[in-house]
Length: 137
View (cartoon, rainbow, N blue to C red):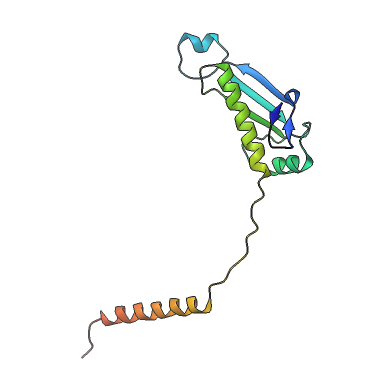
């Protein structure tokens, strides 16, 4: 059972975890041991609430396929257990980030005094530059 929040959790059978061989340097061990983890999570078929599903499917994340499957590959650590924990933590982060509703932006306008100060500074700056010119005879 993977706990997302106080009232949202994911059963283990919704998450598909496949051990694979890690890439990169590591000598003979990398060729023998399947220490990396390939995690797949089907959003539509999961037991998540509809709010989470909708938000996850609308996320523009490269780890989410067009079919609505989250694919995570963890191979940073040397042991399979640590990579498994890392992949599950990344899944939790993705789901929690989808739950955060961004604040609605309220358009603001500069105050009357701020506009006046801006224009005054511009005219003052223009006068300074005008005084740098050569004096006409």
